[in-house]
Image 1 (cartoon, helix red, strand yellow):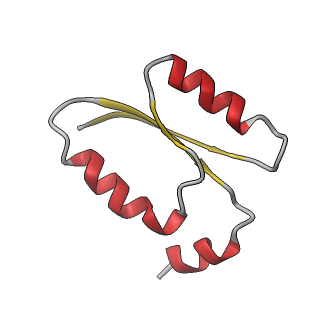
Image 2: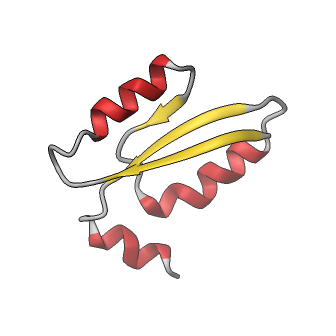
Image 3: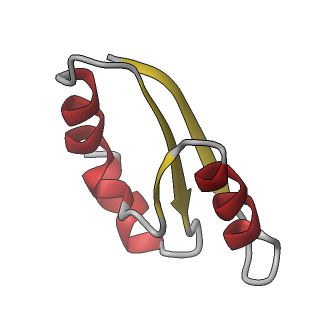
Length: 72
């Protein structure tokens, strides 16, 4: 059961780490630089949880290889 998922992306120096730290300080489970191809499995894992979880995920959109795999 997932109560909230926050997606963070941006270029280097845009404040992704600062935003992620803020979420962690506010009780979110955070993953930095999760490969986009792992997102479906990660979401399935979250859905299988018995308790509500707040999650923050950081993606680097410049990694085109992950986006190519994600669309398949």
